[in-house]
Image 1 (cartoon, rainbow, N blue to C red):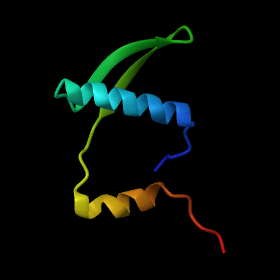
Image 2: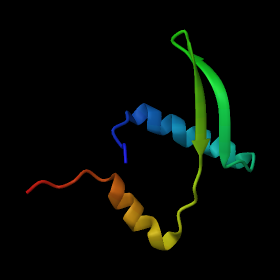
Image 3: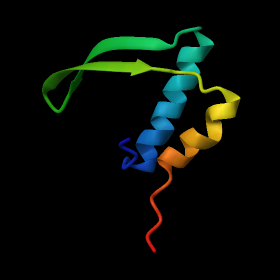
Length: 66
């Protein structure tokens, strides 16, 4: 899992997630223009079951080195 993103992107994704959920949406697809190029952009929100939460969090934590 790619977790090497800046905090600013993580915050932006959190804000976008809140906006999507306020509109009862869990999927968004659109066309965006950035730095003079066009890109397809997609976002999917997948609910995590409470019993799976710790495992998912562990996937995001950096691996410990001995």
